[in-house]
Image (cartoon, rainbow, N blue to C red; front, side, top):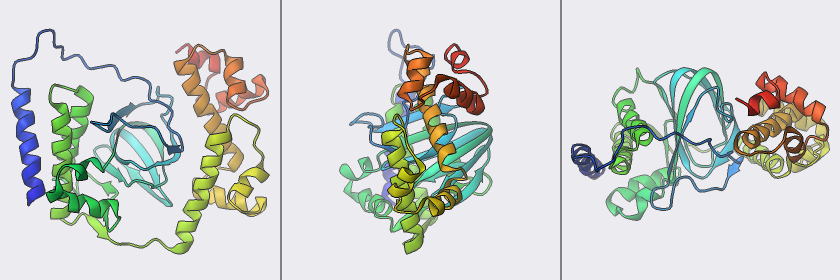
Length: 318
């Protein structure tokens, strides 16, 4: 298969690069991963660079974005669990992800993750990069972009022993960033997609029900409204209006989709923004409280302690 040949070429380049003498002053010390920028519910920021649109994130319980709140983005994403368990929700389906497992998130899919004593990693990337300079494999990638080929979203290590080692190489390359790691990442992603098509690890043109699609779109509108207005007072009526529902029906709908009440979700989202501000700026607790939509500092501290198990002052001093 042509895709496999391309992957082999990239892989060969990477192996050659790894065995070249290291440049003067080169250190194997891992680059300290900066605090991950807060992910908008509809992420519009660029992941990586225009030449290499790949972004890597390592998350544990010290990370301000440890709990993956509901969000969506046009880029695709790979998620692997290193330890513990991650309860992933993709649109309306929930699955338990164990150590060694891989999750593939299609662009535009609403997803969230609830970690349980978990350490996990994410790779967010622009799939279009694989169609720009390689027409021979572009037709395969286009099937994924067009959703005529829906790649399996959960690869369990024991069932997909040929796939997991390939994606492990990708994550390790992104983590260590050795000379030539970019070629390893791109080459092994070609390898991953070649295995997907070789072993038919995808579903063909599975149409979403009209009702299910409408529910996802309604939830997206509400999440986008919260993301744009979290710093301002928001009422239940306003959230219901964003979904074009009555407040009573909206509460049932929102809880069934997110397993949270609308106000609980709003408060949690505000606290997530507050964590980012406390981690990356010199703003005072009072300033952060007001900037994140809390009109009362005492209430902000109470809600912060509820979700994070400590006060904002303690968190900012960690």
